[in-house]
Structure formats: structure tokens, C-alpha cells
Image 1: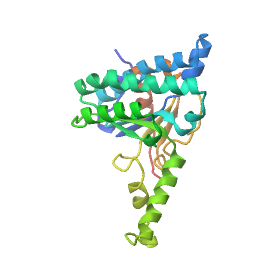
Image 2: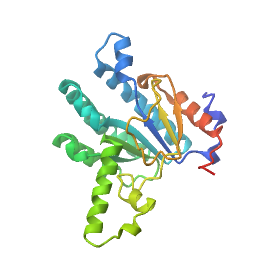
Image 3: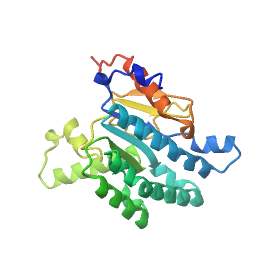
Amino acid sequence: MSEFKEKIDKSRLPKHVAIIMDGNGRWAQERGYDRIFGHQNGVTSVRETTEAAAEIGIGYLTLYAFSTENWNRPQSEVDALMELLVDTIEKETPTLNKNNVRLEAIGDLNRMPGSASEKLKRCIKQTEKNTGLTLVLALSYSSRWEITNAVKNICKEVESGRLTIDEITDEVVSRHLTTQSIPDPDLMIRTSGEERISNFLLWQLAYTELYFTKVHWPAFRKENFFQAIYEFQQRERRFGK
């Protein structure tokens, strides 16, 4: 039985939880393995966390799976990560459907290899009618890329006369982000003890509660997720008021 799950108030759940899944490499190296071993074991944590979110009724779960900066890692690690990512998505699709989970992806998806992109699109299509948890994968994502892209698109609209400068508001900017159909996160969790945001959802995190845990991502389980939700519910959110 989960100690923290029993304490969670289901009437005050965060609508959207975002997670920076950090510590795969360190977890593996502490055990004498290559970094990719940590990424492979992190798949179990993704499954557990997705199930935990679905169990208690969270609406949206966003996982920072691959940043634009990750393209600068050694090619062997990038290739292994991409292969792992695509294989996992393909294998997990029946489970997502069984659990009524809808998959979405945000980021500069055009940079992804063709085969990875095709498999991702296929999984998104196969789960699009599901009505439970929406699982959002941030792939080839960085917030600065996203905001720069939004600015360019807004400039094009002003240039074409569809928008005036005075009509540019917070809402207009939000509408041009990759998260336009997703509510801003109420809670952001980062594993592995690092206490920074690392170019993740910078615009969307304006009023988000931040939760940091020393647990490395491959060791993160349902109970850790439930603890984060419980501790979120102990805070008073004022939204600047």
C-alpha cells in the first residue's frame, strides 16, 4: 500500500505535471555501466510514473525526454537514445491504449531521424482517440528554440497584416508555442538533485510549483511520484496575489 497515495486529496490534483528526468547517466556510472544502461532502466520509471499519474487522475504529464542540447552528446549515445526512444514508444503503444492514455509530442520534431519520426507519428495517431491521461513527450525540445520560433511566427503574422503589434498579448504568445493545446504545468519535478530548469518550458513555468528530489530517474517509482503530489498539495499557491 502506498503511504503517500492514501494522503492525496483527489479534489485538488495538479492538472498538469512536468518532469525533468535527470540522472540516468550518473545512476549507471555509479554501478559501473555505460550511460545508455541508465537510459534503458529509465524506461521502467517512465512506465511507473505514467501509470501513477493515470491512477490518480492527472490530466497531463509532460516528460523532458530529449533536449536540443542532447544532439551535442557523443553520436553513439544519441543514436542509442533515439533507437531506445522509438522502440519503447512502439512497444508501449498497446499499453497506452489499454490504459486510455493519449500520446503527444512537442519540440523541433523535424530534426528527428526519419524512422523515429514515422514511428512517433504512428503511435500518436493510434492513441489519438483516448480520453484519459495525455502523455506529452518533449523531444528535440528547448524553451529558447520554442520562444524564438513563436516570435518568428508572430512577426510573419504582423508582416502579413493578420496581426498588429498592439494585439500581441500573453495569450497570443501562448497560442504560438508548441504547448498551445496544453495547460501550463501546476507542478514541475526534477530528479537527481539538480535544482535548475535547464531550458524546459520557461514561459509555461511562470507560476509552477517546483519540486526537486535527489532520487536518480532510473530509481524513481510510483511512491516518489505520489510523494511529490502530496507535497505539492501542502503548498499555498498565490499566483502573485
